Amino acid sequence: MQESSQQPSAPPPALSNEGAGLAPETTASSSPEGVLAPKARGAAKSIIDLLQTLVLAALVFLLVSTSFQNFEVEGTSMTPNVQNGDMIIVSKAAFRSVHLPGWATHLPFIDRDGDGYFTPFGEPKRGDVIVFHLPSQSERNLIKRVVGLPGDSIEIRRGIVFRNGERLNEDYLDPALVGERSLNLLTVPENEFFVMGDERSRSFDSRDWGTLPRKYIIGKAWFSYWPSEQFGRVPQYRAEPLEN
Image (cartoon, rainbow, N blue to C red; front, side, top):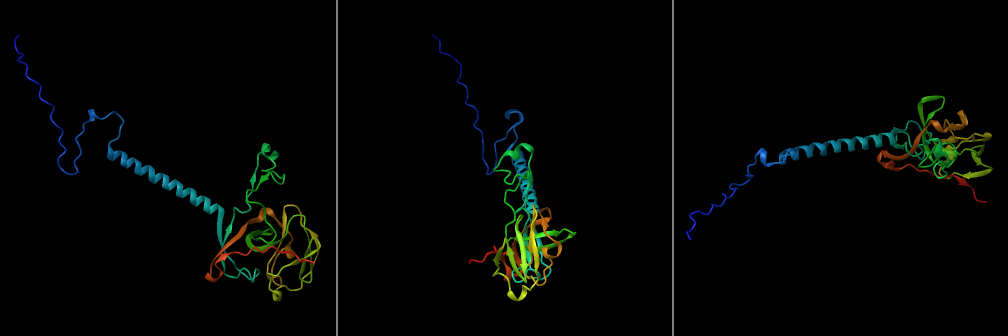
């Protein structure tokens, strides 16, 4: 037999990656079509991250701006619990209601009152401090305390409030600022509220212009942030009947 004269094939040249920071050289034919190079992928990801951050920031801003609003208190009608010049944050979401479609009104846990509206955070309660538009002057905002709910009977005898025939214990008031104004017996209509200021001797409230329709309520006075000595939650005193 004759020995083969064919020479063994030389091994392929090794890829060189010498030099710090150098990446292997690539060509268009070595990458599948549509695959981004590392630098392009990094730039695209940065743009997507930036857009996501901007969208999230816009959503947060929209949520905050539609749920909260700051006000400066002008006047002394809520003394001693809210002072003239106080800067407060009002929760506009506290009493927000959503009109329900017809089919949803049959769900008792959604339409609690059967009025066709869903109020996820509830209705104003006795003692809540609220901010609202004055019904006769919608551009004027007032801050008062809820004393009577729809269906309550209210009577005031020389400054002493009787709700549903029971005298209220309002020890959060300054006795020197209560005054002796009286009010004949009335019943608060449906979807309306009886409100008064804590400085009863000077407050312009439901004793003067009547009960407050719900649609004029802006929100619940939630937090006082200025001046520093008033920093904290706005007191929401629940005036309860005196115990016999």
